[in-house]
Length: 237
Image 1 (cartoon, one colour):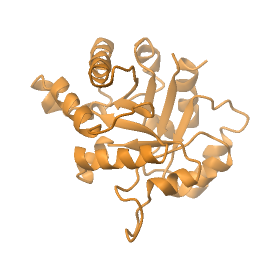
Image 2 (image 1 turned 135 degrees about the horizontal axis):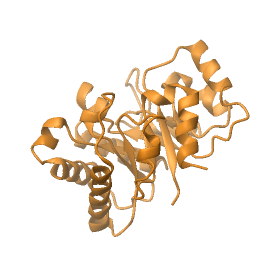
Image 3 (image 1 turned 90 degrees about the vertical axis):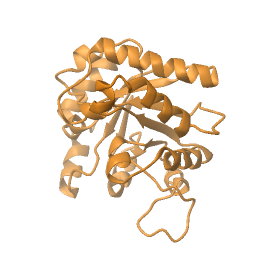
């Protein structure tokens, strides 16, 4: 099974740190790694010939939207991946499934590979609503989308992000199966599913035993090249 590691670097690193970061990957085999730095740093990763993704783009095609970036602008830079619907976008920027759906459609029109993030809160989990919430996010996020060949789903339980708390392997396996079954029900196709949520170089050995995952969405650990390398080398040989 093809596997990838998506490094979501979020709003971190200053310019001098980016140069040092890139130097750490010189002469290193980055196959299977997708770097998603802060948007202003994307050209530096592209110039290093790394596979890159953007963390977000606008729900509009183009025009007078100061401060925004369009999907077509992203593609014009030969960027192949985009993270859409991350829990931080949903929570802090109040992105709804409808907004996420619009973004996904624009991304697909521009041949981007979309990493659609879905996940439940701790309250949802404690009330046994995980599958209900994930199904809603899948159905509404992919509404009226016929072709999912360029869709990857990242399951990231919101209660796990940055907390150090993670579901058990069995829980992740079962949830991944549920996601795959839901996609198969809707599209009669298999889909790549990543896990994200406090993935580190210390727990990757355990997490790598989950055999229905296609990789991982890595947050904080992706900021440290040595940690990201260990994660990558554990699941991508």
